[in-house]
Length: 430
Image 1 (tube, rainbow, N blue to C red):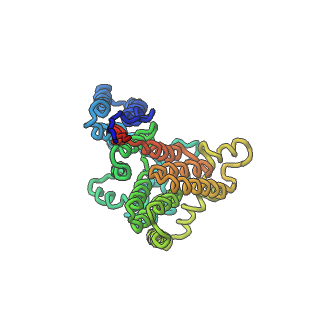
Image 2: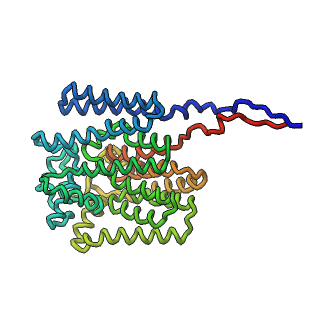
Image 3: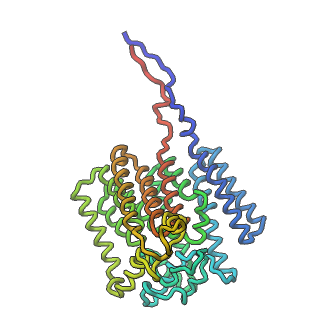
């Protein structure tokens, strides 16, 4: 004889945290981000009424996301736009309307903009004189004359992808690289939502863009975003089993910024989790190699010495024309402790980077395959970027942010809303 009884399902002790993960994270990140943005606005002498209106509207958006579940997606998106994008738009307007001896744009974004201008004028961006072009007015805040004045360390994708927009803006008489970076930010936000549908994607995007300090980097030019957008797009392609697209996008990412190489093995690991076999991976790798070679070849043919000198010798070499040790990483510690005697002395940082990278990739390969969690790819990509760059010749605040935003996004993207089965009655039979 069978009897049926309905009893409440047991919920895990962490159910409250999962249920309220999005509003908790949104409030926890929006408050410090708003405080930083408030200080930025004060530094720029924005009217107090304008600041109050802006942050008041932001508070309403956050409040709507917290107290109105149906408005949560819109509220979190508006908070990101307000606390991340509005300061960037303000920086663009201020630079082009308020006369000042210092250009209100970071040296990386400004150099990318100047590189595109050189190319449009038929001048090789590698080996060009950026000091004469005006880069000396950019506020990089170093204790030495920026080596970027005479060297372009990034690969061509960084200035090739925004070139159509830069060319279209020429009739206006001005261009600002941060316009393209805002487009890259929008694509990054959209890809995160596609990678993690629903609540996980929204909180991953919130963590990525509202991590405290992100707006400080963004107002000067968040020039890691184009590379990150391409890496995330490649991860999305791998997740959808579009392995040739994955290879194509990874090729574009690597020639945008060399740091993308650190994420390649981890994206490939996810492709294996999704069922890619060795032949599919080889075809994807071949396509990535062809794309990278086709992008680099014109500049190697133009002036191989200038290209290799800027992107390899200057970054990894030593001597008077090498990038000096600076920042807050392992290199700075070794220099201050006397292990390295001079800021431009040779030291095998590259070998240390390889060892650290292989360790992170190996652990990532094992954990990603064992758990099959997409968010872990972001987590280990962030760890690879953070740790490898930490042991490189220079480690800046932007590198800390680059790794931190991916790590935090990967951690929070693991959050899952309560399963429907947890709220349904359990059926017992005897």
